[in-house]
Amino acid sequence: MAVYDLQEQEQLDDLKAWWSRWGNYVTAAVLAVCIAIVAVQGWRWWKHRQSDQASTLYAAVMSGARANDLAKARDAAMQLQERYSGTVHAPSAALIVARLAYDKGDKVAARAQLTWALEHADDDMKQVARYRLAELQFDEKQYDDALRTLDAKHDPSFEGLYADLRGDILAAAGRNAEARAAYELAVAKLDPKSPYRAYVQVKLDAAGGPAEPIAAATGASASGASTATAPAPATSTPAAPVSAPPAPVPASTAPAK
Image 1: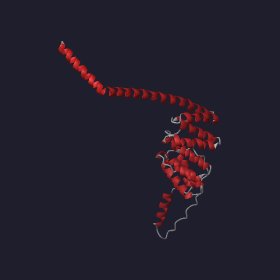
Image 2: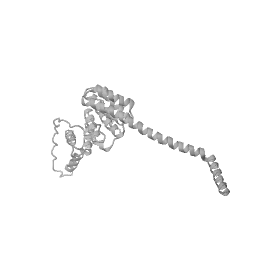
Image 3: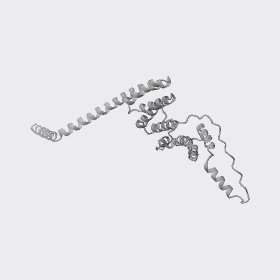
Image 4: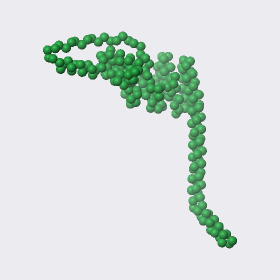
């Protein structure tokens, strides 16, 4: 019996020695794990609460937009920007209010909302905001500013839309050759089945048509018989103005309306 008591005492002494050496580290590690778990759970609760409150304000923005009430929509959007700028709802609301303000002729408010969205939105939404800002600058005849806005890097899915708007800006600025090239790029990048592409094609035809087929035709006539006289090119008559269908914004980036 005394042997067992001696063995237990030795084990107890070993445990005390180990704890004396490592106990503080073990306690600190356990405490750190507990704090991390509490912190993660607290962060998740806080984010969920932020999202719920932002959703409520975003619903108010949508309600104001449906009622065509700019003041109501803008007030809710401003609260979103001040209190929940890190949520996806805030830049989405800014785009909605910008469109509503633009339609009501308040271009100052529209520009302010678009600028805010450019500073706070994710990359996809920034491309929508940038396109709309360029539209606003174009409407105010700030052609150089609008072109610089469109110069920013953008995804291939926006290439056709950006090129078409660039063509409109260049045509308004009297830079017809560059406008024609921009329309040609837009036609090449837009979905062939899209009604919007057909509208851009009308603008390209009015500007003189694609450059490459014309160049090819010129080369063919030059290589023909030397005695043949090439017919004079027909004078292109600008097509009658047509109503433009709304520019298609990729569904993944378009804010809900």
